[in-house]
Length: 164
Image 1 (tube, rainbow, N blue to C red):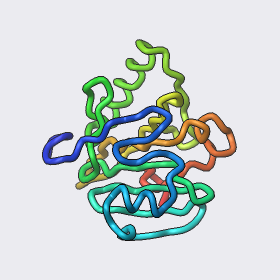
Image 2 (image 1 turned 90 degrees about the vertical axis):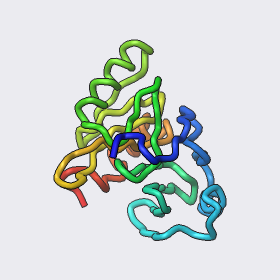
Image 3 (image 1 turned 45 degrees about the horizontal axis):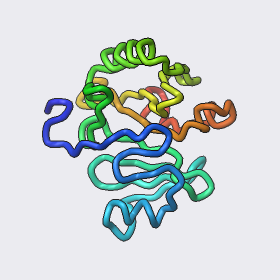
């Protein structure tokens, strides 16, 4: 499957959210945005976490949406300047983000787990193993999580190589 084949496309709204989701939404508002009564799966600590159909996982801080993670293959596709962020070789996306940041003056940050983030866009590049191959998995985080050392050092680590 190509990076965009058969996928819904979501618009990145820097600082505000992604697709139908907006940072600060309650779990009920998120479920309503997906037109479901509840998520497929809920988990706790360190953040409330919910999984929805089509490869979307959300994380809450104090009951408010703070992070959106998309599956590398089944999640919606997000384009940045026409470049697909999900389901590619992580090295390609990493280089694209570096080039994009240099051209547009975005702030770069590497998190403790070595993930690259464009803090002012709220884009965090992670990867996911799919059939023995690592693929890019974008995570979208409210900007103050990336600006705060406390939150930045406690970002959800699921999907990161070496973490469970």
